[in-house]
Length: 153
Image (cartoon, rainbow, N blue to C red):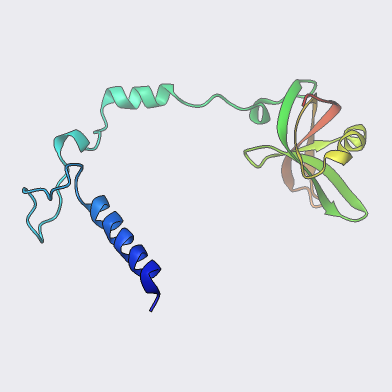
């Protein structure tokens, strides 16, 4: 139906399938009987949790990010994508970092970075923390605002 090209494709695909199934020597493994499940050998045995492994895992906890430890007046370097959020006429520019956390910009930062919208950028600025509260008094969390923004690259 497809001519000789279809036959060549079929033969090559069958060779690929057979070669990917067979071990590196090209011969079937004599230890395997059809219908028996494969067993993990000793080299591929899962690692058991021990006190030493658990202690090593606890010691490898990641360092807290600037986002979590930011204080008002602190100088922070932030890299991420510049995005515009909100609804007209109340839109603002933010930088969304690799962990999907938003860093808001003040007016001067917005003017400086408006031509970088939807682009990756690294900036340096002073952090200002602003507690966000709804009209009913419910706290929404802390907004991190960058002021005195300068472009690093």
